Amino acid sequence: MREAFITPDGLARLTEELERLSDIGRREVAQRMRHAVSTDANTGENADYHAAREEQALLEQRIAILQERIASAQLVEPDESNGSVDVGERVRLRDMDTGEKLEVELVGSFEGDPFRGRISVASPLGEALLGRRHGEVAIVDAPKGRIRFKVLAVDPPVGT
Image (cartoon, rainbow, N blue to C red; front, side, top):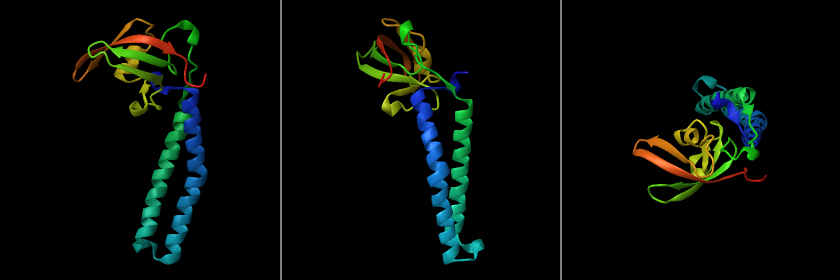
């Protein structure tokens, strides 16, 4: 199941966020709750207390999501030797209609961030790129029509 793929960098980010929320996040929310009670012991009508409780619920929900994602994640190391696009690799492309060049990194769905060039393997572009080689064309059916991208290069992840 592609949705559970994750790069080492992505796993490190999720783990870091989980540790931060579990430690600092919980401590900060508990402090806000204590402060709200100390200023108004009537928690039934204490807006600050209710806001802190709501924040606590959202925090615990995010922690549970992170724990589930980490537990179900399948760590993927790119296979740089095969010459084809794998999860975790950078891909340089050219839009065959406009000539525009772009560079993206193919990542697991938990890691997608198109504004940073991190394209989820579960996205239409990610699916079209997976397994392509230098010189091949990836075709993406988009709302504005069919887009064709030529693979100019497949590079190892940044930092390797």
